[in-house]
Amino acid sequence: MPLLDNGMTLVDLRVILAVAECASCTRAAHRLGISQPAVSRRIAMLERRLEVRLFRREGQKFIPTEAGQIFCAHATDVLDRVEALENETIGVAHKPKGSVALGVPPSTGEMLLRHILPEYRKLYPDVKIRVEQGYVGDIFEMLMSKQIDLALLNGRYNPNDVHTEKIYDYDLGIVYPFAWNENSPLGGGRFPQSLTMAEVAQLPLFLPGPNQSLRQLIDEAFQKAGRQPRIEAEINSFVLQKSMVLAGHGAMFMTTAAIRTVDRDKLSFVPISDASIIYTLHLAVRQFGQPTFAARLLLDMVRTKKPLIRAFLDGEIDN
Image 1 (cartoon, rainbow, N blue to C red):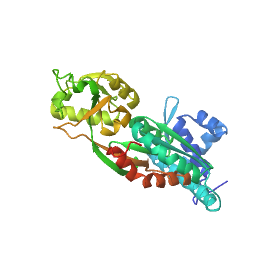
Image 2: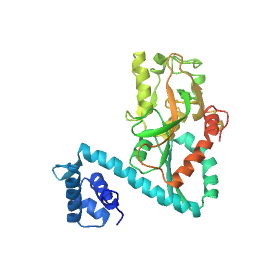
Image 3: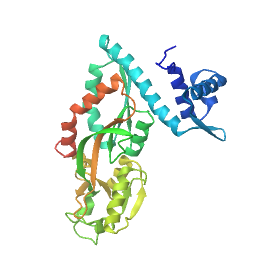
Image 4: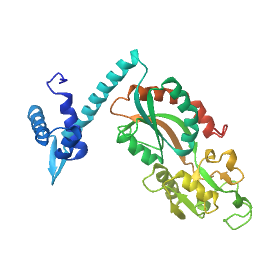
């Protein structure tokens, strides 16, 4: 059984993490394939050795104490490093194996995958790739819960949670149905070449839900302007929002990148003149723990595509 310098084993670390994640000794034992008494004994042994309580009981649940949370953070880091050691040692003599999961936002993700997946698969055919697409709040939760290894994220994040590399800053504007150019909902006639927040507040808007980072930026802009948005519906899907705008039912906050060549006779974009809503795109990994060898190879490849991503978001290329 692998031992750490203080006699603690890797199994001990896995037991504590399993109990913390399951909030139950019984479920943790089932996950680990050992008996529930064995789990309880390991917890008691570690608490005696460390002279600190790692869990407190809340009804039937086992909740990590502050010391337990610190233990779990470091245990995760140790186990990730052990996995990285194994993967990289094998990778020296063999082609990388294993799996890697990437989270991407809709528009940028579609473009990026076309350029990355074929190249990565050609170089590392033994690595299984999984891609998750969604709103950044959902992608962030997947990253923190270790469902994915790296992500493209928009917005602001706690540096204690994730390590981020900025790729691009851009101003959000309003994407609206092309038909509004000749028949504006702002009193008829031609649609303005730019909008104030007061005018934006008069439009029927499709917004993401309050828990999404984009919505938080939008709400801040309305608060600064002293206005309330006219919310047609809250939709946590870029694709569904865009489909509603294409159907002529309202407008959405987005960049010019949302309008590709195929949409230019159906959608239009207008900037906001009295507010700057900066949406930052980051490449992100979890702060605690080391990415696997396969994940680091994908991370390096995404870095090489930064100029391509910027050109796409600037509207210089469509795909």
